[in-house]
Amino acid sequence: MSITWAGTILIIKDSLSDLDLISSYLEEQGYNIIKATTAKEGLEITLESKPDIIVTDVVMPGRTGFELCRFLKSHSTHQHIPILVCSANNQENYRIWARKQGADAYFTTPFSAEDLLSAIEGFRAYLSK
Image (cartoon, rainbow, N blue to C red; front, top):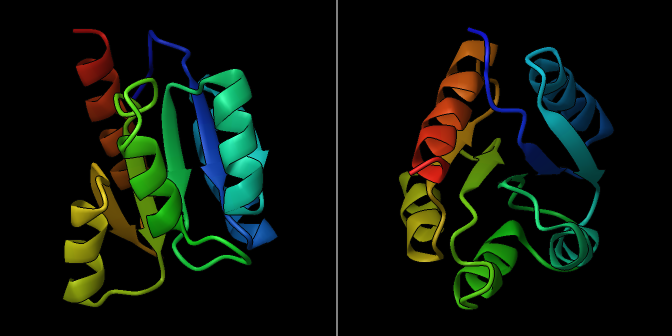
């Protein structure tokens, strides 16, 4: 799958191996990547850099990905940013809670590069409307 839109994607993961893996998947497709290892750092980057899409973990030091999602979706200047929650937790209540916090998609690890790219492309189509 090749892209024609090289938007900026913020990836927030406290696992450096997951952060690097997701980044490499997306960089290979031409996306601009910004990395953060905590929700606090991710929020600061979002406020400063205004990424087009956010991929976040749930459980991180300090603030959770759910709290970050809820905060961003409750502010008109950031609520349009699609958020993909990516977690090792496969429980249905996590998926439901992610949606209630405003997440636009929920993935469990491990996942394929194709699944991730498909979700990102879906967001891209939404953003270009």
